[in-house]
Length: 346
Image 1 (cartoon, rainbow, N blue to C red):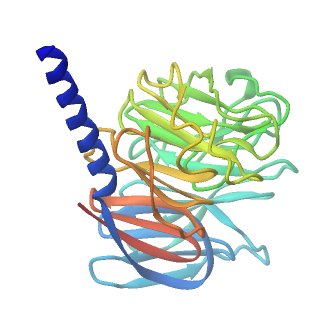
Image 2 (cartoon, rainbow, N blue to C red):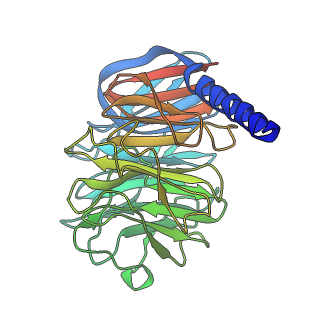
Image 3 (cartoon, rainbow, N blue to C red):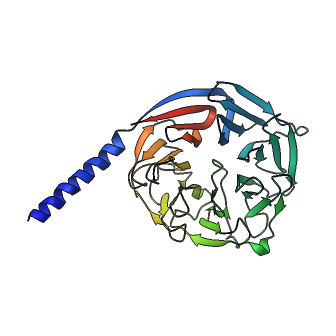
């Protein structure tokens, strides 16, 4: 009896602490950019938040000094919508969606711009981009043949080469990717994960920086053009989360979030019928041991303190598409016509 009583007390203490962790967090929000722009691509670089959006627009906000800069990348009369962005220490890389597809390299020091890749195809559509290190980076896009489009640089972004479909897993009819928040790619060390969505939704992984690939099934809702995984993040090489759902039924909060604890070999659904519905971006909070997670999407800003098992809505703002952390207390979220700074307080 005594052992049972002690166990019961410890169980209540655990529940109390878990509940407290979920409800004790508060946030403050201030708007740092407010203008006519749609932003789905953003990276944090030291004291700057770089962003890219529609109407050929690229810029940054310095959150230490308040300095802002914005410029348009001209390409004849083309109106480009940028949804992919990546960086190394010297440059920012930006890619547009649609045909023709371009990657631009912008020098961080003098903001000079060079076109480093172009592709023409009626089906070309690049969704996200990321760098492994100073020299090597990857961009992924919808299939133009029977595989996802994957282009890789090994020379610091000066040149990019498209991977042949013979060296990639085959995709299913109606399987592609979503350019929702530049989070279709996750990288930890040499390991890479790429997520797909649509009629088929899976996780593709590489242990050797994009040379060889394997693919894993995920129990996320799929079967229609606007279903599946829209976003992913990994806290370390083992712990990761994917999210998304049904874009056309944004309140659907089942089969829309799953986690892995073995590096993506297996995935399990979490928080079924609770928490957020459709999500466009998911991110782990730094230094949280993989326990604290946030999402933005159709239901606003949500937060989990227990690895995704339970969720609390922190904001009802449905206009946010993407979010990135500057540190464990500060995040920047962007979307329709704005960038906001979110400060997390316990």
